[in-house]
Length: 355
Image 1 (tube, rainbow, N blue to C red):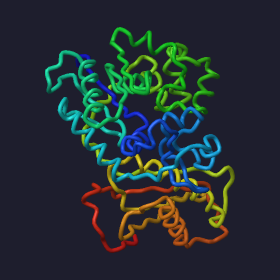
Image 2 (image 1 turned 30 degrees about the vertical axis):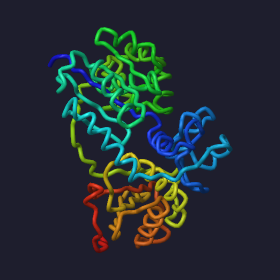
Image 3 (image 1 turned 180 degrees about the vertical axis):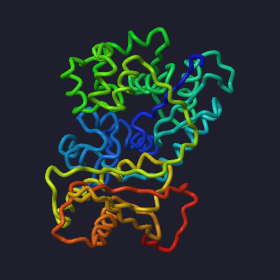
Image 4 (image 1 turned 90 degrees about the horizontal axis):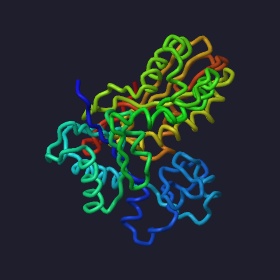
């Protein structure tokens, strides 16, 4: 297989930028897209708000403390989805190989492009120009030989930037990076790698594959490849989401009645993840694991999809009431999920369905 040309396009502060574009009074001001409230989380923050340390997924009350002058705007996901479709129409002029993991980003394989432009860099430049001229929004782009590197590159000169990693430049770019920049490396994995002496990608490249496999299992193989800039995953268009879920394990096993705070937190996290989907989820799922490792699930499909985080939370808590095991039984894990995804325009009212 020859060298591929992959572009990762990432819209800059997408939801907040759409709000600022459509309301002149918001331009140049710190805008936070979120419902105001004790349990709300930030969906997006304009770059003016980010200067105060505000970022997405942060509790709204904390964002308000960090930036008291911020203007809170309730999210309008119907509008954001419509703008996302307009962005995608621009992509389609250049290639049919488009994979959008969320509303505000997409991978494009332009190894061969429709417009006859000689380089992927020129394609990326043209796409950014068309987004600015036609939609009055800005996008950052990364160009590289694979998806992993293209995503790193798109973040390199945000906002409104373009960064290119040529095949012969991969090592020079990659080796000095901290291992925390690699996908899937959170704080815990970063600490575990640090104990192996791997603080940079260059250090990680010096760790033998058997050692990584022993410590990290299958993910050890992925780390070994990423340290060498290897990513064979293809750009897959129209990859439909089957389900999304979040779960957490309690520090010590708890009674069913004590799970409410965790369910509420997970529902918020799930609602935030749902905002990145272009389709609508119909079915809410609650998952529990007993102290004996028995897994229970309860699900419900309401007449219309949950329209707010509060509604999602209430359904998850109601599903808990359908667990009819001994009330003294203890649980080690709880999860909340969404499934039965449908295109937004195809979602119609259906009778409620208990499973």
